[in-house]
Amino acid sequence: MRILVTNDDGYQAPGIAALIEAMQGLGEITVVAPEKNHSGASSSLTLRNAIDVHERGERYYIVAGTPTDCIHLALSGNFLPHKPDLIVSGINDGSNMGDDTIYSGTVAAAIEGHLFNIAAIAFSMANKQVQHFATGAAVARQLVQRFCATPPPGIPLYNVNIPDIALDQLGAIVPTRLGRRHIAQPAVFKKKKENCLTYQIGEAGNAKDDAPGSDFAAVQQGMVSVSPLMIDLTATAELDTVADWLKT
Image (cartoon, rainbow, N blue to C red; front, side):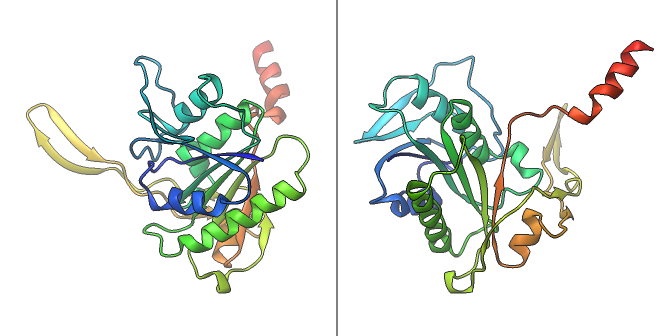
C-alpha cells in the first residue's frame, strides 16, 4: 500500500505529524505538504506563478503552494516514484463539517486526489486548539487499516470529523450526511487608513441542520463522523424547472 499524506495547515503543523506517525507500518509513506498554512484555500490552484517543490528528505516534499497544488503536482509532476493507492489529508486543527467542506483546504486536497481517480480521506478534529490529536491519529489508523484490509467499492472520497476528546471517551464511527451551518458571523472592521478599509472575516456560523444522521449530530454525541462525498454539484431535480424557464 502506497499512502500519500498531505494537509492544509502546513508541513510543521502537529496534525500532520500525528497523521504521519499513525500511518507508520501500514505501507510506503510519502509526504507532500504545503510550506505554509492554507486553511480556507478550498480547491484553489496556483496558475500565474511557478511553484517550488523542496525535497526535505526521502519521500518528503514541501510545496510553496496550496493543498490542491500539492496533490496536483504530486500526481502530475512526475517527481513521485509511484502513484499512491490512498491519499490521507489532515489531521486538521478544526472541524470540516457541513458547509465547511466547500472552503476547506483539507477536504480540497482529498478531492483533488479523487479527481485523479485515487481514493482519499480527509481527517479533521472538531475543535480549534486541539487537545487530543492522539485520538484523531488512532481513528485515522483504524480507518486506513480497514481500507487496506477491505477496500470499499469504487473510488471513495470520505470526510472524517473526530471529536476532540480522549480515546476512551470516543463513541462509534458512523456514516453521516453533511449538515448545514448558519450564515457566518459578520466581518469585523479593523481599521481605516487613507482610502483603505481593513476587515477580518467573521467566525463560522453555528449548526443550522444538526438533525440525526448529520455530521454535526454525530460529533455532538461524541461519535466519529464519516461522510462520503461526491463532486457532481448539479441540482438534478431542477433540470426540468430550468428547461421550462428557458422555454418562456
